[in-house]
Length: 339
Image (tube, rainbow, N blue to C red):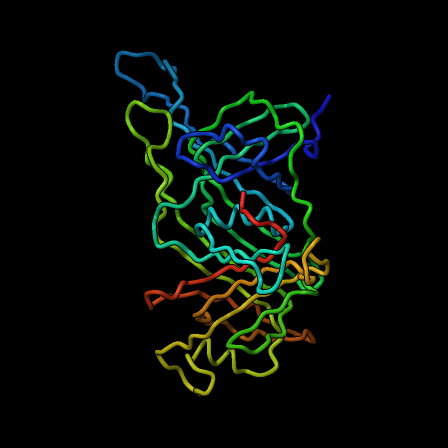
């Protein structure tokens, strides 16, 4: 007898209060279809060193403090990833597109506060192997990517303070059935000019401190976000050397190295082919990610044989102006409230 991974389920919702698993979780959470992933234990077996006067064998062993972490990989569906983005960036501003009914836009901007929303997670492993509940989970990292002939994909790295096993699985999860997004309906612009991108990716890392254990407790005392990092990459076949000069020399018009860098906004937009059910007038679901100031990292042009020259260009987002966020995520969908 074995347990099929496909029979599992992952549900989540934003917690109302720290340390408390929501009592109405089963009716207010959203279930997320995932490709793979789970939250695994971070725990050491405490074994004493050899002692003078003792024997040659280990005399005892205890279990130490614990936390849980792991990555969930998924096809990007906008209603469920909104919960993850809210935990990663902070609570969004919600509006309805002007003159439209049945559609809502969630505007996520990164919080300057080190305290971000906790989420509660239910994880059923297989068809009955185990059911876990996690309290006080944070989204430590969030990654999205797409290729021209592929789907918009995502990976979220979570850390949780507390787990209990043997929980009762939610019998009828509210799965996110919203449409998928694909590369053929995705655009990337740099400085307002469309890039002939073959693929793109970006990462938001909150860098949570995950070792704040306290005496007298098995669990983390706190999860505090440290310095935020926002970076990404885009693969192109260059049509001229302007981007290379900009990345290596600092400006596209230079012919030798300089010290300053060029900053420009980079925008990624992906739209579903399907309409939002019940929207009037008809609106399509979409995600628009804006990085107001990005700097290209130096890269080399690498010709080889008869290959077409192609580069995977890395970039970093910067923020040196109070009031201008390092990035924004705008999601339009048929969901009014983020779980």
